[in-house]
Image (cartoon, rainbow, N blue to C red):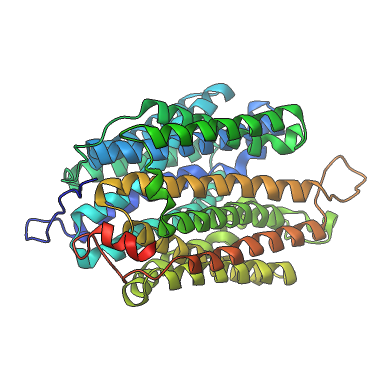
Length: 489
C-alpha cells in the first residue's frame, strides 16, 4: 500500500490553538452523552414504566451502535476525508439528542441512543485530523489531549447528571447533550480544515462491514444481557456461537478482498495487537469501576452497614477526581511519550488503575477513600488512553490511521461492555438478606469487584512489554510507517 502524502508544517498549516479546542469539545460531547444516563437508569425505568432489565437497553443500544459505527466512520474518513465524517458522527449526536428531548416513548429513546452511538467515530477521526493537520511537534500532545478527554467527559457527565437532576427532569440530561453536540458542530465547521489525507487507492468493503457489524452485535448483546438471560441459557450461548462463526467469516472476507475494511496484517502488528489488548482491559476497568463505585456510594448505609447513602449528584462528585486526573494525564502523558516513548505511560496507566482498585478493596470506609482512588484511577486511565494512539500511529500509515484507531476504540467499548456485565454478575451473585424487597450486594461482593478490576488493570500494565520499543514521539513526517512497523515486528 502506498504512503499517503503527508502535510508539512508551514505557515498556512492550522495551529493547535485553532483546531484542538474543536476536536476536544467534540470528544467531550460524545463521552458526556455516553455516560450521563448511567446514574439515572433506575429513575428512568420508573419514569417510563419499563422493567429494570429493559431499561439497560439504553446503554446496550448505545454501546452496540458505537462499536459498529466507530470503525466504519474511521475507515470512511480514511477514504473520503476526516472532516466530513466527523460532521456525520456529530450529526448522530445532534439528531439522537434532539429525538431524546422530544420523545416520551421508551422505544424511540432506544432509537435516540442508537443514533448517539455514531458519536463513537469522533475519537479515531479526531486523532487522524490531529495527525494530518498539526505541526509535528504538536501531534503527540494533541493526540494525548483528545484521548484523555474521553475519561474527562465520562467523569463530568456523571457530575452534570446529578446536578441537573437536582433542579430539572431527566430531559435536561438530553438537552445538555444536544447543546454540547451543536457547539461541537459549529466549532468543527469553523475551525477544522478539509483534511489532505485521502486513501484514493482504497475502496469500500460492504461484506466486511456487514460481517463486522454482525459479530460485534451478537457478542455485545450476549454480554450485555447475559446476567438477565442466564450465562448458560440458549439465547446467550446461541449468540456467542453466532458471534464466533460470523467473526471467522469476517476474518475470511478481510483476508480475501482487495480493499478490506480492516487490514488484518496491520492489526497483527505487535504495536497494534498488544495496544488493542491493553485497550480492552483498560476499558473493562474504567466502565466497570464507574458502575461499581457509583452503586457503592449510593448504597444506604443504615441498611447495608457500608456505603454513603449518596444522592446521584453526590456520587457523581465523588467520581469527579477521575476527570481531574485524566485532565492532568494529558500533558503528562504527552511529555512522557516525547521523552521515553509510549510504553512508560501505558504501563503506568495500568499500574495506577490497579493501585486505585486495590486501595478501594482494602479501604472504603471514608469518603476520602473514594475521592483518592477515583483521582488515581483517572490519572491512570488518562495516561493509558494518551499512550494507545501513539503506539498505533507509530505503526500504521496515515491512510490507515482512522480504521486502526477506530478498532482500538471498539475494543475499549467491548471491554467496557464485558466489564459492566462481569461487575453486575459479581454484585448480583452475592446479596444481603433483608426484610424488604430490595437487593443489595454484600460488602464482600464489592470487594471482589474492586479486586477483579484491579487485576485487569495490572494485566494491562504487563501487556506493553510484548511490544518492542518504537522511536519516541515518532510522527509520520519524521519516519515512514513501514520502517516503524519493522521495529515492532
